[in-house]
Image (cartoon, rainbow, N blue to C red; front, side, top):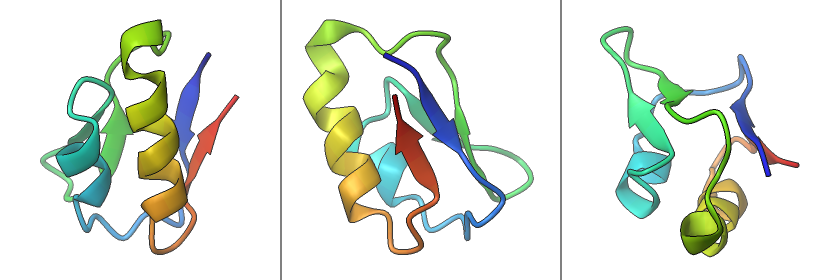
Length: 61
């Protein structure tokens, strides 16, 4: 499973709060994916971060 963050990101940090193993707010103030593959043990958290993103900037495939 892979995660991505689109240009729509507003840098609210909710994704990092929900799933810090996958998402991180960078120095640019925007969220970034910090892993190549989402591990099975954090899949549910990554999906929750995508669902809770206020601008729907996160895609989980």
